[in-house]
Length: 328
Image (tube, rainbow, N blue to C red; front, side, top):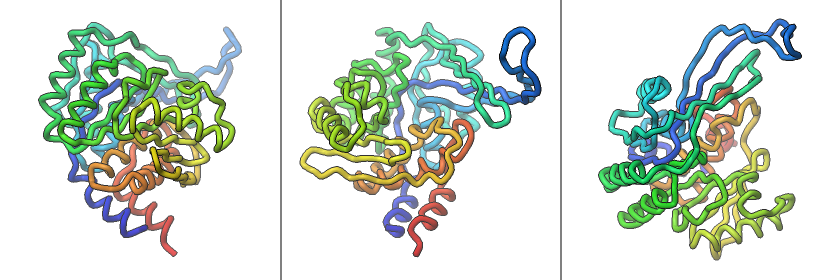
């Protein structure tokens, strides 16, 4: 196992990944709390600093860049300060200028988190999540057409902000099928038909419950939900991320595969799904089987949840984790 996973690691940085989805900026306001407000029973945060990180599909791009692979990012931004800051943090994260950030008549999605003593106290969002207009859809699809032939894998990173319409999703999937390129989907919402014929989809437990209407309190119920998705998605493999219970892989005419979590300390699950989809896509692009790709993604998720805030994992951390887990 160590040899197989290490061999895959050596190939990750050689891949070129196309990402389309909901780009956003994560803002962190860091401070201390020493007293309660006399105006209302709420803590007063004394602000010490602010920091910015890529969020949503932007964090998937940053996760891939952190592994020294090339990434092309397509999405929608506004004509605002958040867009300027997002471009800056993407550049700092190693995501190049050859991206498809289309300007639209909507603000750049901004999520602001207030952190005191390493605890998130409040989050407020500035966004518009209506479906993308047809002009922006066309611009994004045109950019995909220009880039996809030179990529080894595609990712659809959906945060339900309106960018991944059925037209955009199916355009990416069908173009990828044309070039025999795998498509990995991080889904949202209830309209999963727009992801039909993708290679693999990675809903978490809550997302699976929402789309299937099932309460997932047993493996039997989980199997029923997976069967529903497999029928709906026309051959797409399903990896359900189960938080503390690890991951489960379902495919037509295959027995399910279960992996336990490798997380030792869980401080913040922000961005963990982004890490899973990034590693999964890179491993598939490198020629790994779905089982091996899921194993590597599971290890990476165990690392990233041990960090505070939206975070990434690098090759050295992955290599160390693999050695620690599988050395006898």
